[in-house]
Amino acid sequence: MAVSTVNISPTALNQPLAQPSDLPALDKVLHSQALAGALEQYGLSLVTQQLRLLLAKLRHQALQQTLSINEVAVAAIAKQLLSQLQQLTASKLKTVINLTGTVLHTNLGRALLPESTVAAISQVLREPTNLEFDLVSGKRGDRDSLIEDLICELTGAEAATVVNNNAAAVLLMLNALANHKQVIVSRGELVEIGGSFRIPDIMSSAGSTLVEVGTTNRTHYADYERAIGEHTAMLMKVHCSNYAVVGFTKETPLTELVALGEHYQLPVTVDLGSGTLVDLSQWGLPHEPTVKETLAAGADLVTFSGDKLLGGPQAGFIVGRKALIEAIKKHPLKRALRVGKLTMAALESVLALYRSPELLPQRLTTLHLLTRSAPDIQAQAQTLQPDLQHYLGEQYRVHCQAMFSQIGSGAMPIESLPSFGLVIEYVGKKSSQIMQLERQFRSQTPPLIGRIHKDALYLDCRCLTPTQADLLQATWSQTSL
Ligand SMILES: *Cc1c(COP(=O)(O)O)cnc(C)c1O
Image 1 (tube, rainbow, N blue to C red):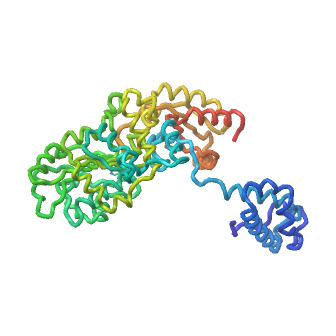
Image 2: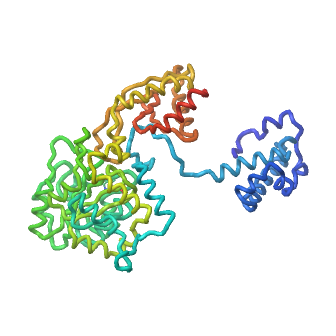
Image 3: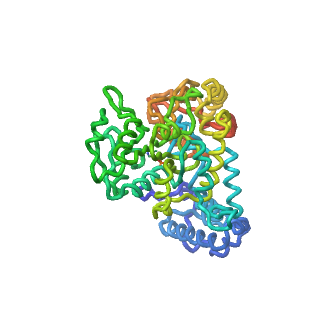
């Protein structure tokens, strides 16, 4: 509680003050009718503990002469306790309404999973599974084997392993194959991903020495070749997922690097980052190198995320040559970075959808959101516009407007998707009003997250689910700010 404010509650102004001796005994409140339901819901010990804290706070207020006599009534204390218990037990991880226009928003949990995947996860939570049990031999099994055939089928890889996320995949690959050794990377590919994943830092954490070659905009075959020495363990390419080097540039093609690797007997690895399993251009989206293409071009190992364009749960894949994958699987870090059964169930379910690629836009939530047409989004925004205008009142102007969504998670950073949404402007002069409105939307239940641009609040409707739209419509048409 703020100490700087004048410590008199509004009620205390025209009510007699309470003395500490006016406070009821703990037992009297605890066994009052008003708390019967709370005792059942939260249990005696939690309710008692919270009541003790509340009574101590009220006693302190009484001593400060800031407590009115009606605030010490048993019913008033019980009411305050109930809201205190509700606040305490409310989940910290909340679902939100993502109107930021960024589909794979890292801070909002990236890919949303299809209903079929949600069902697959809940199934394995309720009953034991063969996570690491070979049902044929009756012996201990390998959890990777649950999805390895499928991922190999979809990418053309010889073998595959899965860990907690792509950062873990890169760390494990480097530590297993290049500990105390050198890894050659182009200066133009020393990526930093938001949330402190930096190629140089991950290299040193893995015990590998980064050997930078070329310049920021141009790296040639000869630059790589000159850097190869007796301590070199790997040639690595990193996909520039969240930036683009344009203008006078030269990137050594993967096929050339593969030839160099073959000549010197060095593995060539590629961190694809977002790595998708299908060619997205068939749905009018920009082309992103697929895992299959990268392996076909000769990469020995490829690493990529499970919850970016792939549209699955948080996970990281390492796929490629069998001998290298075997070495990685035996490494102790693999055990530390392995995924649990929830992730396995989700991955198996999402990967299975890729067997019918033409049905993906309907079935895979991420692709559905990325391929939603502007007219479809426009219709949704237009339906909501009068309700939002009603809710906000005449102080604000609400327009339905064309805008651009982002793919997000560093995938295709300079591409944007035509979308539609609502733009809110404040009619008066006070520019802080829009910021206050943004905060207000963010603190409601469920929180609504938009984005401020040039003194206006933008609500991109691309990621608005039909259920969320119904909820907003009901709220906005029936209440006002
Ligand atoms: C996103 C990304 C990573 C990190 O992947 P996470 O799954 O977030 O750990 C690593 N490398 C590249 C190139 C990326 O784009």
